[in-house]
Amino acid sequence: MNVDNTTREYIDSSVARSYLPVLSLENAVELMDRRDTFNDFERTVIYTHYLIARGDFDSIVDFLELNADERHRIVNHTMDQTWNGNTLHTCLYWNTGANALNIYRYLDNCGAVPVRDYYEQYPWSMDGVLYICPLRGFNVTPGYDRNPAEFRTTYAEVLRHFGPPLIPPPRAPPSLSTPTLTWSADVGTTPSVPSAVDELVASCRLHHPYSLYTRNSDGYYSTYAPTCNGCAVGRREAEEHIVADRIRSYTHALEELWLRGYDDESVIMAQNTAGMLMADIATLESMTRVIVTPIDYAQRMLDIHTAANAVHIAMTNNASLESSRNRLVQQITDSRMSSLHAAPILLVSQSRLTNSNMMTSESSPVT
Image 1 (cartoon, rainbow, N blue to C red):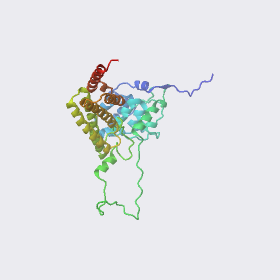
Image 2 (image 1 turned 90 degrees about the vertical axis):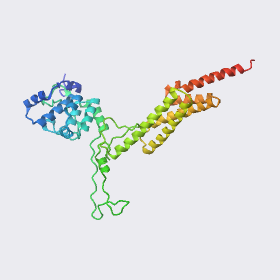
Image 3 (image 1 turned 30 degrees about the vertical axis):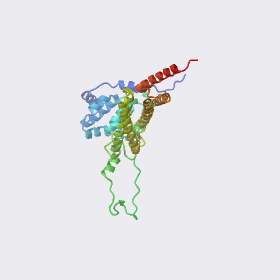
Image 4 (image 1 turned 45 degrees about the horizontal axis):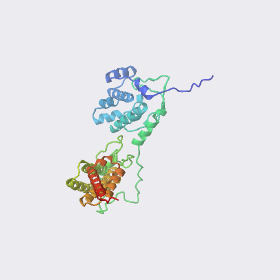
């Protein structure tokens, strides 16, 4: 029987990483010097790649507890020993899943920039099959290959969270027949210049005009998104979060007011809280169309408050309770706030309904 010698046997990345022992910088330097001679900075870079290949997140962070400029140099430095790739390449060559994304996010926050390596591959497009030890330069899994298919999901997640490097479209060259300055709408003779705020937005890794990062309906970015540099967009979003947090707080307070007790004082407090809640909903809706989840929960609670208040009025006026109470129960069911099924106002109204029914039955003529 003919054997296909091209058949590959693959090994999981977790197994390959286990073949890289825990080494201190001093031990690692000894192994490096057996192979080649590096200066101190290059040794630091190679050791960083080794820690990243091992997938040891805590050790990476501890080792790179340096000043920001030095850290930036290390994570972006390329050399022959790394096939002209930087730390992002090593991260995605050896690691998968959440750990890969956590390391990638940390390196991204350190200023690592995706580049093409010697093979013209970005970190998320590598298809190499050999696990080469960053320190000693030999295959740590002889007879077994790296399986590029194992990394596809991780690469897709990196692209989804971080996006490919985006280059702004080139500006059209200025026309020789028209002025190159733009003019202010307020003062027709004063050229407009980019403000410091505009420059901050343009340089913000999270909010620059070509950013692919988007917020969810709670107003938050992915945990893998870079940090804002304090630009105008980030400050505006921070103001939105202040209002959204108030909405959450008022929603919880209104729920607690109907849960913890029932008397005239608590009803007045609930009415005041509901008023502040409605005002903040209107404020947030005027600020953004993105943050909708806190508003949705607040509206459900306001519906319950309205129904509960109707039950309160019915009891106060000695009116029929049954329809009001049923409406409140239905509102609770629709809102999925099951804890309110034990609200004191429901117990009081149930007691009154029971007593009312008993009195009705006692007063009915016997036939």
